[in-house]
Length: 444
Ligand code: GLY
Ligand code: MN
Ligand code: MN
Image (cartoon, rainbow, N blue to C red; front, side, top):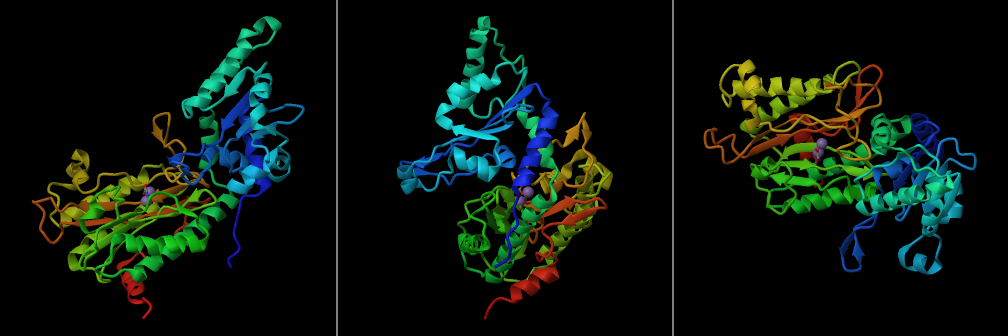
């Protein structure tokens, strides 16, 4: 069994320290965890902690509220959580409880969630700034407003409600944008599980299989690797389905002569991988498929080279657009000059999305892409996807029939390092040669 990486208690604590240094001593932050979501009667969706909450606590239970009070003498990091209850635990599994939360999660103090109305107003009182993500959880918003109002209404007793409300997300998201060594190790683990799964499906694909049969092979590899669920609904788009960007029905039969586009990444310890590979169902690319594939591959490789400190966030996209436009011009799928095609954006008929997004606890992770209207500059610790594509719908009557129904995307996850970049998802077959070789190596 591979040793499994994780985020240590000390790192969670240092994240809280960093947040406190951004908040200053006159503030209080309140952050509710995620709620269970009902799927139907008596059945809930698998619980997934709120990403900000997980980032600051590592505490992955429902009905919890985290409170951070920089400079508080009797403890700065406080957790409200469910109390232990043998009957509940018999039905629904373990509950940590406040006592153990202090020890296991490094909290300074912890209280039963049922006491929050009695305790929290007293903690808010006298603070001048309240850091809270208003608009995220409506019911909880109303409770926060009630607590603040209860302080305001008793002002004659000399109490003061906070005068300033600050969106907590801005601060936490700036921290989350920069991944630590431990986070990178966890993301590499998610990437490794994802790579194993993509290799497995390349070997298992056969004409005549349903897309969901191939998805079953991927899910098998995810679970075996330790990822309880994908980081997002997997896309298995064969033939023209690949041209539907968010196709998730995955219920078509895959035919010989078609490509299948698979966009699927594992979630490990709440961190996402986000990988796309496109390969021929019968194991051999046709000439037309090769022509389009190699344009996307060249664009993706050039874009990855653009990921380095000092370059700005849009440079990979600019590189992709130039290469895709030139490639489509060379195949007579676009008309005009390179510059007019780029200026008039006529390429969007074939390439209509952007080249990447931040990646981390969320698959489309937090963090600003622009600062003061300018594209953000890459800095070490950021992780972005690089995922160009070309999509030639079956319905494009003006395109030669050999190209119609081809949809290709290639996606990897790229860490910005001090000197350049590191591809976290490297080693997953990507060139035509690598893919055909992997597909030919299926078990006899
Ligand atoms: N899988 C979602 C994306 O590539 O953005
Ligand atoms: Mn993707
Ligand atoms: Mn992506």
